[in-house]
Image 1 (spheres, one colour):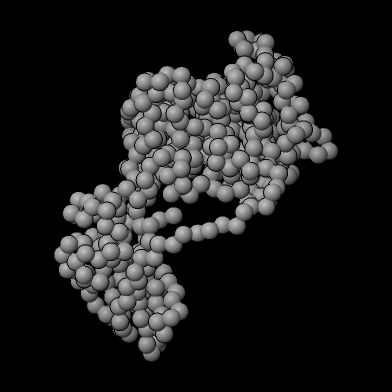
Image 2 (cartoon, one colour; image 1 turned 90 degrees about the vertical axis):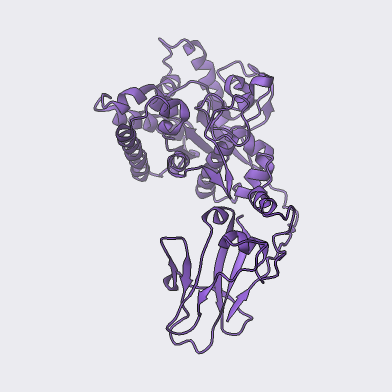
Length: 442
C-alpha cells in the first residue's frame, strides 16, 4: 500500500531563553575577521561607497547572536582604539592586510621594516589587556599568506619549507596566546586556511586545470597537517574548518542553498546572491555565515556552549533578506498556479504540490509516477527531480500499523544513476506500508 502524507507546515514556539552571560571571544585575524563596516573599499556597493552592505562573521554574531556570544563592546568610529584596530568590537583584533609573519613580529615586539610597525607595541599591549577578559581566543590567519604566495604555489616554485614555516609561525602565535595568561590559559580555536584559489580574483588568472588541482591538493594537505599538529599540543586547540567553505565553492556547481542559486562574483553592488564581494576575493555575507558556523561549532566544542548555528533558511531569510521558498514559488508560478500552497493539490491526483516538485511531475496533470509494489520480493520505484531536491526532502517511511512510522533504512533504499529511488520492505514482514514524507529543507 502506498500512502502519501500531506505536507504539514507547523510553527515552532520557543520559551524565552534564560538570562546568561554571552561568551566572550577574542579574535586574532585579518580583514576576513575585521568588521566589514570598516572595509568599505570592497564591502560597500559602488552606488553607496561609504555604507557596507555585506557583513563579516564577527558582525553576524553581534547582530544575530548577541545574547550567546560577543567579541566585546562595539565602537563605531574608526581609529577609536589608537592601535591597528579600525574600530569595531573591543576583543576583535582583525587587522586588515596582515599575514602570519606580521603577527609573529607584532607579538614578538619586532616591527622593523613594516610600515605599520610603529603601532605594533600599542596593539600588543591592548591585546594583552583584552585577553584577560576572554576565556577563548580564535586565531583566523593565513589567507593573505596564500594569496601572496599563490603564483609560486601554482607554478611549483615555492620554497621547499614554505608550508612548514607557515605552520611553525601559527604554532608560535598559538603558544604566545597559551602562555600569556599564565596558570589560566584560554581555550584556543585555530582556523584552517580557506583555499584562495577558489576566489574569482585568483581563479580568473590562475586557471590551468591541472595546476589548479595540484595547488588545491597542496593547500588541502597543509590544512590536514594543521589538524595533525593540533593533536600534538597539550591541551590541543580546537580546529575550525574554514577550508570546507572553499571546498564547497570548488565542488558545488552552481553554488546554491536550498535551491537558491548564487553567483561567485561579478556585480559591483554586492548583491546578496554573490558568494564573494565586489573585489572577487573577500567572502560576502553568505560565505561569512558559513565561516561563522564553523567557528561557532569549534567554540561549542572548546567551551561546552550551545551557541546556535545559522540554518540555511535563516541565512536566506534573516541574513540575506531573500525568500527561502523562492525556488518553489518560481516553479509553481511557471506551472500556472502562482501562490498555490505546497500542500495544495490542484490536479487532484493525491500528490501535493511539493511532492510533485520533488518528483518532477506536473501539478496541473494527473500523475501516477510510481511503479512496482512495496511487497516481499518486489520493490517500489519513483523518479525524482534533482533541482527540486535542492529545495526539499522526500523521505520514504514505513509502518506495520499506519500509526507508527520510521524511515526506510538505507540498506533497503537504492538511489539509481538516473536519480530515481526504489525501496523494498523488511525481509519477513507480514504486512507493511510505505509513504513519502515531504518538506522544505531547514
